[in-house]
Length: 262
Ligand code: CA
Image (tube, rainbow, N blue to C red; front, side, top):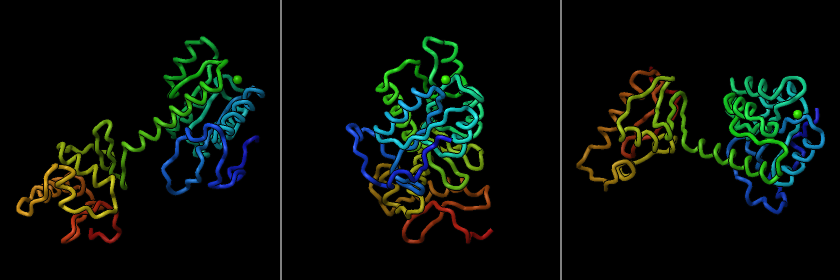
């Protein structure tokens, strides 16, 4: 096992590297330790060492495996931000690693393929690789590809929101609860996305009127109340656990509550 221990670097320490400013920051949250974690699965000794050293110096926390089976085990349990995966590996090859990994993980994967082997590239992309790089490659190219993958990943995160079994995807304009698609109007979708984005916060009618309808709140109009009622009928009424709550005199909040009456 050639893996470096996670704790081998001081948490939150400033790592000095010339281009550290380009390392993409992850939004802070539970388990966030200040580092982007990469897994490199590559059996060629020199290349593996070279890639690990270069990525470490570029500000990443890097684990290295030189074997397909071990690498897959690490990929499944390690919570990595991105994986660099060689195709030709002892144990099981890169395609197999990817195939198993994709059953339970959407971690971005950059595959290393033999030069000009178009079949390998196509196979890699079809098996769920996010990008590929042909050997031999310049380190700067590898770094640029990894950063692009991480950037794509963080963009995806910010367009998808979830609370309990309620999910919303801004890119596909799709909202589901318990896996079932919710048929929402454009305004209801906008209302739900704001409530989900700011889940746990009480949002006033004035704020919702401004953000969703782009209008100044007028207490004579009940447009917010009506929309909330309709939204609630779709996202909550068919389900036991209610998520959209009215806070009397203040507004609305989307959150999980344990004390809901059945
Ligand atoms: Ca290899």
